[in-house]
Amino acid sequence: MNSSGNETQNRDQPPEGTIVHSERGEPLTRVVYEKDQIIFPEGENSTDAFVVESGRVGVFKSTEGKSVRLGVLEKGAIFGEMAAVTGATRSATALALESSVVVRISRTIVQNKLAGCDPFITALIHILINNLGRINERYAVHHQVADQLLRDLTMSAEMTVEKVA
Image (tube, rainbow, N blue to C red; front, top):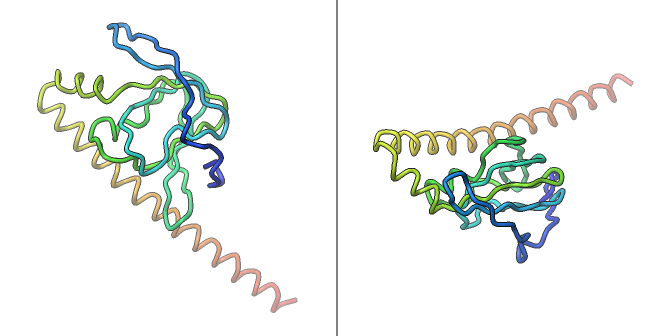
């Protein structure tokens, strides 16, 4: 799906990546995505997290058949963390808005890092991720309501202008 909501990539063949290693020696995958290429679609059962190394990535949520942009991520931003932590399906679609390089971090690495945290911190992260998911849902719904209100006001204004003319 591109920023206007159209599907532009076949997900059967994701781009191949280059294996790189973190400072601690953990294997990570650096992947290049071209403009309008889907990194992952909403509803997918994948659980990797990603870090934007270069480029820009858009995050889109589908509500009532329409795509709502939740955000634009740039260098250093992490995304896909909700699925990496919870194991849930993707709550939004990530799309390269321009040629972008991202580093894929496996759920195993994320889970191993969480296992080493104080249980309070782990619980706090889960609470924050659940809150973020609810906020994303509300934002997408309110965005749709605001768009409909704007369309209604525009149509009403056009009808008023026609009556006056």
